[in-house]
Amino acid sequence: MSTHPATASIEAQRGLKIPRHIGVIMDGNGRWAKQRGLGRSEGHKAGVEAVRRIVALAIEYGVDCLTLFSFSAENWRRPPDEVRFIFGLLRRFVTSDLERLHDQNVRIRIIGGREGLERGLRGIIHDVESRTAANTGLDLVIAFNYGAKTEIVNATRAIARKVASGELDPDSIDEATIARHLDTSGLPDPDLILRTSGEMRLSNFLLWQSAYAELVFVEENWPDFDEAVFVRALKSYTARDRRFGGVRT
Ligand code: FPP
Image 1: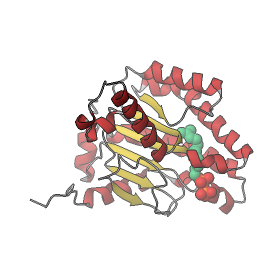
Image 2 (image 1 turned 135 degrees about the vertical axis):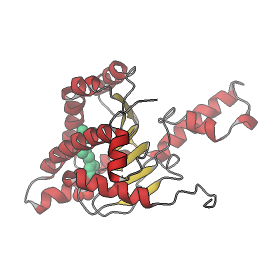
Image 3 (image 1 turned 180 degrees about the horizontal axis):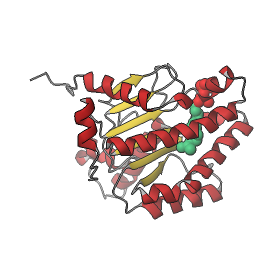
Image 4 (image 1 turned 90 degrees about the vertical axis):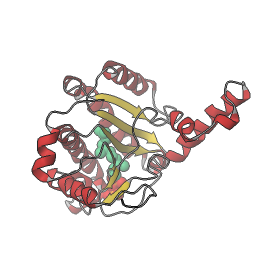
């Protein structure tokens, strides 16, 4: 478990509950750019700056785990130039920010399908994950080429193979078995899912893991994400009554 010395004071100052795990659907880069008469690429570039801001805030506020939805399995339907551009941004982000994140004790995990990614990018992902694997601070999870239904299909196949080989008794399969076979194995379930740009959907993001997550939707487009938006989302989360199916005691 990570230790975050700054957490207690910030919580006390602001009376905020800090979620252990925040999942973010970073939406609205294109609209942000359009409103400014810019190309969509400019929106994605500004989106990377917002990624840097939320990572810094997560560390400052003592969040244990931050999962960012960077590219969905459905995003391949976008024009090839835009797909290439987003891939380039991810590649540049994980290489240019790696040393700083490593110095900040951040452990990076990239979830989602590796097939369809070019070999160079797969190599970079492998290096970034192994370089930071022993870090004990923020778990930064980047969901790239990720889709929750495919993740569940892959987990089901892995479990079925173990049953077929006799390694696993079907009657022993429980929720923990499924969770262990998901890409997020070992991480806590998200307490808060935040989506920007006013859209109110999960869009195939962490479907299994979000069973009891609080959902917070904000109007700002992703490139406009800042500390004020972050604190507003935390206030909304703090005000929620989380019962996990039980009753208030
Ligand atoms: C949603 O906006 C954004 C994306 C699909 C891409 C998000 C990518 C980044 C922020 C950059 C790369 C990521 C990292 C971690 C460095 P949209 O294009 O769907 O916006 P729109 O709905 O307004 O068109």
